Image (cartoon, rainbow, N blue to C red):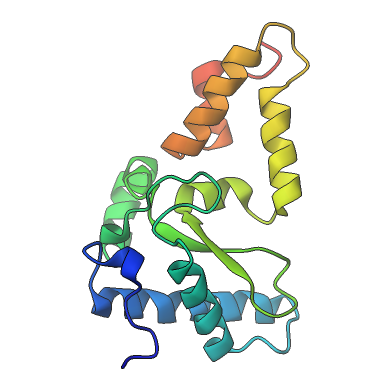
Length: 175
């Protein structure tokens, strides 16, 4: 039996080969990131184990939004096409599964699986900080703007839009 067998939640969504490749690549990237940030105990095996556990524990859905993840997209991203298509190309991968740190990456590995879009929005924020940003957008101080803010937040979380794109479409919060 494989140590990192394809989790049941991914059956029919991707192959064992693609999952294994994704898992090893994600673990290596997270180890590099945490080592650069000063984690001297970052270890690829521990990271693979933690990421695999996160996938087994509901990794078919984004841990923050509950939306289905597109495991069929792993190993399909093309850097050359990305250079040509820029933002439009990247948006096609908004629901690509990726790995998010639950904490600052300086202790034992602790991960959640979420979409690339959600991870871009959350960035290095803690969950509480991320929720606060979402609340700020939804409950902004400009009167009569809550409906607009709700729509903007939903677009941000469902379309992978960056802040500058949001402002291009909707203006600044003061408008």
